[in-house]
Length: 214
Image (cartoon, rainbow, N blue to C red):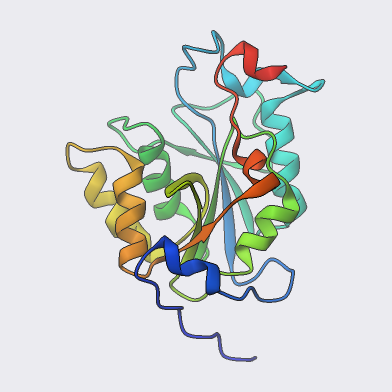
């Protein structure tokens, strides 16, 4: 088997535009986790069960992840879910609850592979083709995060197993924001920032409230 290329060096998101993706397939040894979200106050109900284009969001996102054929699919939630398929493992959020940070800490600890593709429940415009494209930039020890207008998109990203320690350190602190964590991972070459522009920005549009479903 051919040896994996060494992780690309990057001092920040602005240099990622020069990276060259590998062929169009799901590379390396990747797990996927669906982050089901929190209390969904603005939506008024559990986002996972919201109907969007005739399907609940959980079904849309799991069908998307299945298309990628990862080694395993996990679901991150505070407790078990009535709609969870029997073949998909529940990963309870690491207590105490720190929002998606708790889910990422728990999933990185539980996964059986080298990389974790994280996808939020409220990103129904994402496509399998785009996620495969992002995965094609991954290398051993290095994941990928999209950058839009200078800001990372941490809830549709691929994290290396090595990122677990950084996430766990933040989870044990008093700052639970994912933005500084992701920027630290980029600075330490554990994430490659990929600038996103044009029509691809639509993939990252989330649905937070009923008007977003139109």
